Length: 99
Image (cartoon, rainbow, N blue to C red; front, side, top):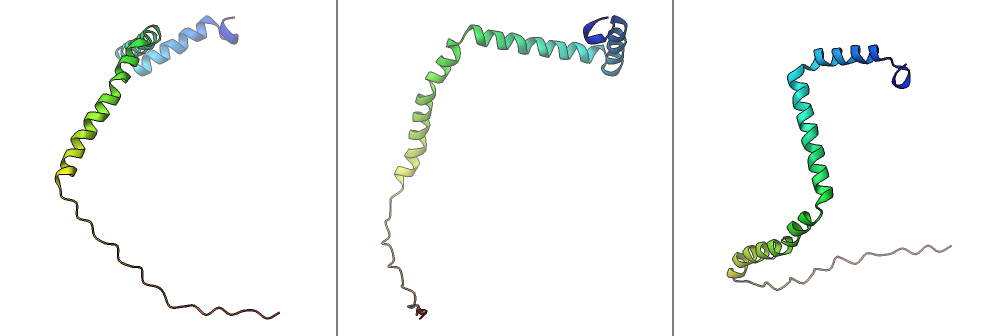
């Protein structure tokens, strides 16, 4: 018996069916993609300082973008219009219940 009641022959038959369905080229590409993803994950765990350095530039980029977008708005003259007084609605007659 193999893993969980599956014999080695059953595993080989399943492997042959998978190869026939997907083909060796596609399985090789999947293996390469999976390997590169695992390598990237491991490198990010081993070197946690690199993302912190990238995040350290974030506030400077935001400040730079804010000044770039604020300059065109500042060059336009601001015209303040007085707020129009709100018109009052007609008074509503309230009926009082005499109970």
